[in-house]
Length: 171
Image 1 (cartoon, rainbow, N blue to C red):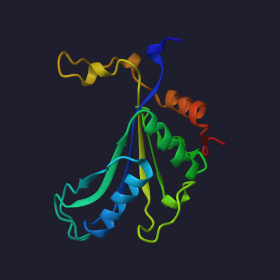
Image 2 (image 1 turned 120 degrees about the horizontal axis):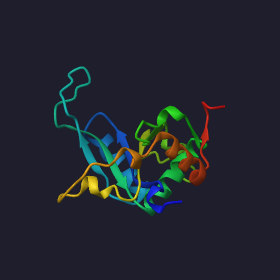
Image 3 (image 1 turned 135 degrees about the vertical axis):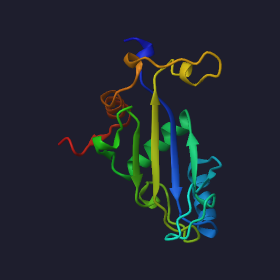
């Protein structure tokens, strides 16, 4: 097989939306740093929504972007929390994967800490093939040709082979 056609994980992003600044957000920041060993960044609201009591540019959540070994470890850890079950609808047309976990204590090895509480989290996995750098570089950036783009089927096969994922809606 051509090594340029192999699918690889570019990054995994884990985020927690709290909806408010303050103590809840600081506990979520501590949880992510404790679980993944990397300092998270805060996410800010884009619009004002008086129904939820949110102002524009108010911190309402946190996220961490993991690459390489840390990304693989985090994906394995979170997939165990949902018994490696994923729906095929959780893949988009570019082959990226997004799924959520309702409670972080469902992940094996994570204990409940009453000081932190219980949080749900979203995981987004971005895939790419070698050579995708030409799209992102500053000098002479180019378009990725259609024949080199990743399909949903390729990433589904990659997840099944490398992470033993079960597709619940295909059965």
